[in-house]
Structures are given as structure tokens and as C-alpha cells.
Length: 492
Image 1 (spheres, rainbow, N blue to C red):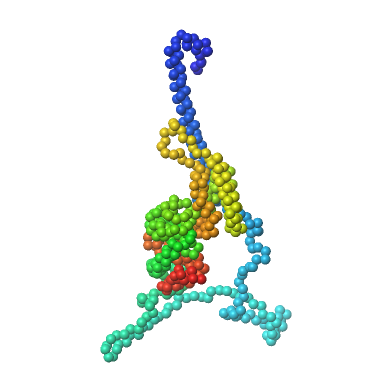
Image 2 (spheres, rainbow, N blue to C red):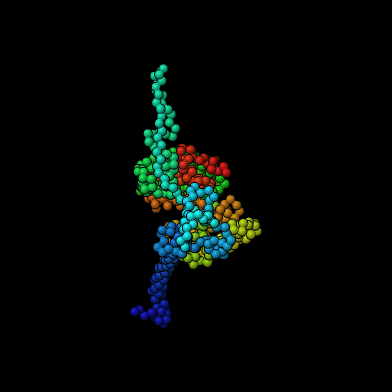
């Protein structure tokens, strides 16, 4: 162990050998400087590791309730928690509400009598008139079988000119044997609305109707419906261009074993789907709607949408989930306050149905105050002269969300001032949800054509359902080659 020199020894060295003293001081200075640099680098490393640990701990706390992760990724299922405020009402049916159940009909299709012939005492009641009739009705589906209708066209030869003349078949009869519109409607309903696989659809007809149907036949029925809906899809694109608000979203799907993307654009009455190997602008441009759209586009902050010259509105459900994640993962107070503010604004506008300008200004001031508090909890990273890494330092999730809330506040709060703009992008998310159901039930698409057929028919089904029409009736018309037009669906 080195013993430091005493004060007298240092003073003696200074007086007797000034040069050695100078060298000693310079060596000490360089040593201290090197140690300071080491300490500074260690401090930077410690700060970096602390931030990394914080991010990793926050990731461990993420689930489908407080982030954009799907429920299937949850290791432990979190207790469901709605972002809506409690209404204060008890769950279930409310007092004095009108219930719905099967009701007796006045003209049943069949009446079955159950007479009383003998009293329990043994006396015969054959000649006694009933004093009352107790009615009970059973609703059931009668047995259904495949009905085969043979069409016969006469062939006659003219005795004058010898020409052979054949009677005309109905226009839809093109083959020696073929399935009718009701059968095709059942196929389309099972395959594209119930979303069963080709194999299960064929199995249903075998079990239910004792009719063997090949998977190729089912595919041909779907392909025929796809061609019949070409003008319907074009009509949707033209009408969507003039909609004041559109919703857009995208989700992954597997085509040919590769990662593709399903894109959806729609509003409360119309739905348009498309599949594409690209998630970005190439896919959006190929759909041909958003590049020429001038209204308000609601989306989930996917950067591609900001490339287009229209107004934007961001989904606040996503933002609230991120706020919950910051509260759970980083324990930052401002995030909880911002979530509460969004809940208050939602309640004021969509529950109380009020839009007083003074109250809205008060909400905006509260929004800014919470942002200021958030930036105080998350100061920007300091630039160190000794840092040799190129580029800007990586920001934390709370910092990134704060910058988004600040830089895109007009798009985030657009729902406050425009009655046509919703609070969330849930409409588009509901439209893409069925694709996830299809992937789980029927698996992946083995061809691009199969994916495109499914998307076009699903767009027709979704649009019919949004307009309150019978999906089965719409599919029957489609099977007859006379599908609804968009104008027909929106007429009422």
C-alpha cells in the first residue's frame, strides 16, 4: 500500500527540485483527467443501462390491455378492464326494461291436439267438452332435402325447311347439371360469412343434405361470385371518395406461406378490402381511394397515411392503451392524468352530448398542463462532448408519446370540434377482425386469387350488414348473378 507524502516532504521537494515538482503535478493532472473521463463514461453507461432496465421491465408489464399487443401474446391473461367509465347501473337487464322472447303466433302451420280421455279417478271424459285449451308452440326447421328439377327443351324439325329448332332454357342454366342459387347461397354463407374452411363446408353438405360436393366446386362458386361483384367494388370506391370521414387499418395475413397485408377502407355504410404484399404506400395506392381523397382519414398513426394530402384523425383508444402502459410500466403520474382527461372529454361529448366552446378550451388548457408536467418528468437527453456514438440518443416510450401528443394534438383532438369525427378507429378494427378469425379457423391462403376472392365477397357481406339488410338474401341474389348495388343498399 502506497503511503502519501507528508506536507513537509512536499514542501521540501518544491524548494529543492522545482522541475520534478512540475512534472509530478502534470502527471497528477493527466491521471485525474483520465479518471474523470472514465467516471463520465461510466456514468453514461449507468444511465443507459438504467434506461434499458426500465424499458425491459416496462415490456414485461405489457399485455393486450395496455399496449397494441394481441391477446394471443399474453402469457398471463390480464383481468379485462374497459376504458369506458362505469355507468353506475347493475349488470344485466335493467328494471322495467322490455324483454324479448319467443311469442305465440296466431296462425301456426300445424296444430296437434292432445285430448284427455279418462279422469284420474277412472271416469271416462270422452263426451265431456273441454273447458279450456292450453297452448304451447314449438318452433323448428322442417327436414330439408336437395330438390332436383329437370328442365326439358323440345327439339323440333321444320317440315318445310328442315331446320332443327330447340326450346330455350332459362338464362342461368348453362350446363347439363349444376347447382341452383339457394345451394350456392348456402355455400357462400358458410364459406365467407360463417368463415368455414373448404373442407368443413363440403362436410356440412355431406352431413346435412347427403350431397357430396368437391372443394373445387365450392371454389368455383366463390370465383363466380367474385366476378359478379366487380362493378359493386368499383361503385364502393367511387362513393368512398366523397365520404366526409373514412376509416383505414391494416393487419397481417399469410398468403403462399409469405407475410402479406390486408388493408381496409370504409365508413359506417361501406367496406372495401384488398390484399397486398406491401404494407405501405404501394398497397394504399393500388386501392385507388386515399390518394385522391380530401376528407378526414381516421387511422392508428401508421406513418404511410401521413403521406397523403387529406386531414387526419388519430385513434384515441390506442393512445389510452399506451397511457395505461406507461402508468403500469414507468409509474409516471402525467400519463394517468392524461387518461382521466380523455375519459372526461369522451363523457362530455359523446355521453352528455355537449360541445360548449368554453368547456372545450378548458380541456385544451388541461391537455397542455399535463404535457408540461410530462416533459418535466421526461427531460430531453443531454448531449455529451465525449460521446462518440453517431445520431440522436434513443428516446423512451413516455418521451415518444409526449412528442406525439404535442406534435399531433390537432389530429388527436379533432373529434372535439367536428361532430363527424369519432373518438376511435374501432370501425376499421372491427372490419379487419374477421380476417383474424378466418386465419384461425380456415388457415392461410394458398393462392393470391383465393385471398382476393375472399376479400371482395367479405366487403360485399360487410356492406350489406352495415346497411341492415339480410346477408343471406344478398348472397342469394349474388348467386343468381344479380347482386345488390350500393345504391340499392343505401336507398332506404
